[in-house]
Amino acid sequence: MNRIISPLETGMRGSAVGDLQDALKLFLERGTLEGATRAVLAGLQRERAEQAYGDYTGRLVHLFQEQRRLEATGRVDETTARAMNAVLGEWGLLEEPIPENPCVVRGRVLSADGQPLPGLMASAFARGLRGETPLGTARTDREGHYLINYTSAQPSRRNGGVALIVRAYDPNDPNKVVAESPLLANAPAETELDLVIADRSYRGPAECQRIGEHIDPLLDGLDPADLDAGQIVLLAARVGIDQVQLAYYARAARLARETGIPKEILYGLFRQGLPDGKTRNGNLRTRGLGSSGT
Image 1 (tube, rainbow, N blue to C red):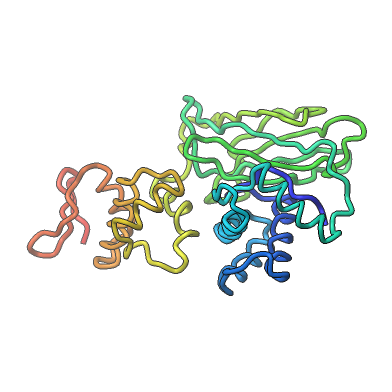
Image 2: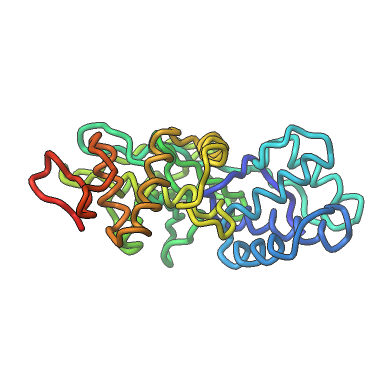
């Protein structure tokens, strides 16, 4: 097996995440990890198929950290990676040497006027004579930051660093490139590349959509319309979303279920400070917009 590298965290994709998920599955099978449900194991298998660091991978990392008395963050830091590799080493499963040059590319995706764009997919590629090799993918956070981890074996660095390029994609159209970095030949092991979207009309995914993308994988089948105040506080802290915005999202989902009005419209009304009650005839009050939704 390959060694676990760090840092790894929610939103990241690539072979390094797949190595982590293979190790977690092995820990479960050999009893090193206890307390995981069948649903979590099934979720891990789905995420492994996409090499995606999702909620189930994070839960198992959190469980490993708790049982090893490490800081339980659900994120693989250097200490957690070392502890996992120690277990794999004890089992004689680490035949490969530690990569000489674990690599990372990070940066921000910004609009033409310098505003951060959260919720976009940033993908890194190594360009060669025969085409491009995907290195990994990560979703930008609320400040537009992305971080992609890859290893020296992907591809080989015998002749120096990879010829690196990073692209940002519209989450509503995975094939639509909205920004692209310059090609960086012989990229160092730690690279920072910011991407600026030239199209001034592009503002990224809507806020309501971004909130859903962050919290829906954590709900474990729970309808966001049924979130109570305590659950909203917990989820907001976990994913770094403003509690008021998440409360609006839950309220919009609840009223959408009652009225059939899309929650995106309702969320927009709440964010504008418009009332969310109903008039006597059952119509949603949309004072200030010049119309009402039914």
